[in-house]
View: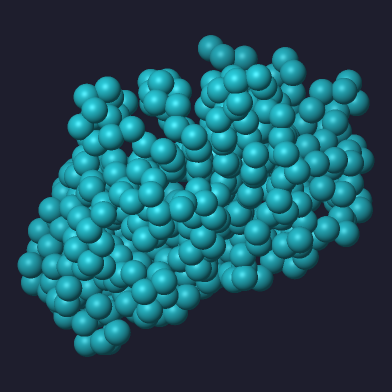
Length: 473
């Protein structure tokens, strides 16, 4: 039987800094670091430990002696229970400071990179209601707050439509108002829940694997288009059409109303058939006159306005003159490839998701762009000598990999090709720094630009320009 960890209490701990994954840092009396989940740098708190390790503790603040001057009042009633906006109690200027610090620390400590002067982080104009995609889960046994548990009140309505409690796959917090996606998102979610409850449509139970309604996805675009997708666990045509017809009549602004029947144990949709109930099977986003088709499975940057700023920085870093062959690795639906195409001779995009490449090709055709080619396949397998022989040696490579960064074989292939410039866009500066260290003998980092895509969270994007070193460097 595993020995239970004894919980310790440390009094009047000063919170010193922000750490990775939205946590903060204090010091225990013995000098060990304490990672905290509910404080802001500058707070002075009593801490109860939740984990004890050789080099550090994890804990929560149980009593606040001094509140940090960096604190602000959270705007959301669900803050502290919902894990979506962990930094909502920290002033935005301080959020930006710690995001920039994290990027610089990762590049120096993990990548051992000699940095130029880092350009100040580009903040988001919109600090709330900036997301263009939200996914909500149904549950017939919603998460109860501490006040509800301690009250004598009999709780009969246990249905929820909201977010997973952090770290709990089967516990859903019912959301009254979310401050991340603009209208009509909240109205659609609330009306869906109300109509389902009134009409006896059952909510999903993930433990027992029963119930009709499973998930609700809402996507919006900057030009006012709206996609709604309902995922059903059971195939009940009468009840399904009852709900979908109601949404069609109540929200005529819905451009694309879709559904999925998914009886699997998990709710991922990438292996599922998406069925269009009304409207189009996609919505359109627009950027600099270019239109991009987005379907239910498409990846698109979740902050449209900041995505535009991110792509402009990427294009500026590439500094194309018009005669270059550009490779766009991890191209997704080809947004960056098409965005830079008018400044390039040709752009070649590679992506592993077949549906994304179909969208990329359709987008290029819609935008009358003829100097782009798109290829599908696992990057480490497709991006090889034969591919380069067929498509040409690139002058510039743009790479925007997922959070895990680039496979080491992909990094090695870039080094084999040795283009003059590499523009590396990353949503995880730690894995970006790891990859940059592998490239530092051949490339020099000449520009760094952090971009805040996700206010009220610890997440940060970063764009780096790598230029090939001269032989004598």
